Image (cartoon, rainbow, N blue to C red; front, side):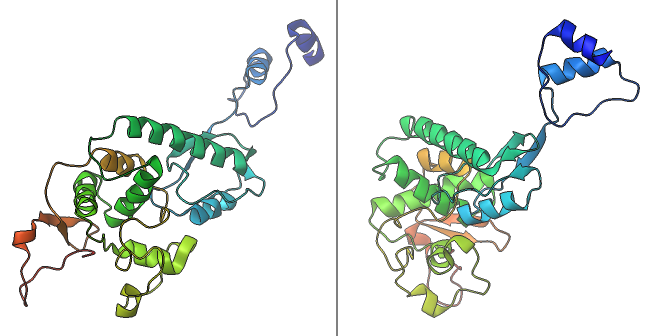
Length: 253
């Protein structure tokens, strides 16, 4: 009977993972197999992970196959992706890279005038720092503005996450508090020790951080204060910075 149905349809069946309700008709089964209506799974990659951390997550998924090549740092777009069982890890990474290239191209074309950034690559580098500096999406344009203002004034960025990446690299975590020795450790990524931007991204920034750098908030602020929750209490103008016991803790500066 199945052979007769297939011969009559003349359509090849597509391999994949399917789910059918009990007592579904043969005709509906064949329709689904012919159309390739396979089960769609989702895999979510959080913003800010290093490429090494992203590949490790993909390797942990039993939905995916193959051992991928390691992409360059900061070339992937963290998002939720629809996949089917058996998709190769290389294919997922290629989609992430393609999506990031398109987004960066679009944002760069619509960037604010007079940004102190010369290339789309520099936009990605700064966005990766913004991503690590705040976990609150609504703060990213303000944090981006602080860094943009500092770059424009040729002030060092002095961002703590760049210290961590300079030491830990693609592992993404230091595993201990930052020490005074770390702050003066002249790694190529340590923005306490170098002028301008580091040579490359310190992670893979998400859409919000990339958009924040392309079009930062309009402010003259040069500092921000950590609130201990992953965000910042407020931005601070240079004349508001005070010394002594009552001085605020300036995040990264």
